[in-house]
Length: 93
Image (cartoon, rainbow, N blue to C red; front, side):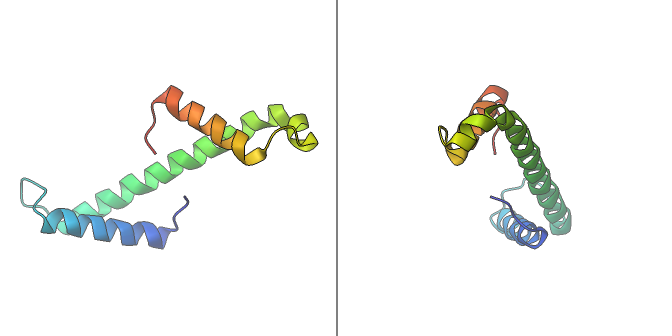
């Protein structure tokens, strides 16, 4: 699922507040630093998934004829290739 920058910011704000409010950190922290770290982590994860999706699309070009003829469903093939790459690379998305 693709998130906009505003959605990433909102999620970062929510998670950092939750972490600080629930005392899930063992030392005093600056909530703004936690927000920035959360934003960076989520953004990097989104970029990783974007790159993976592009790689899947490149791989799918090998099946262009099957896709055009209707022998293979685009969405099913995309999901299958993506899951295989995730498994092989031991990614968590």
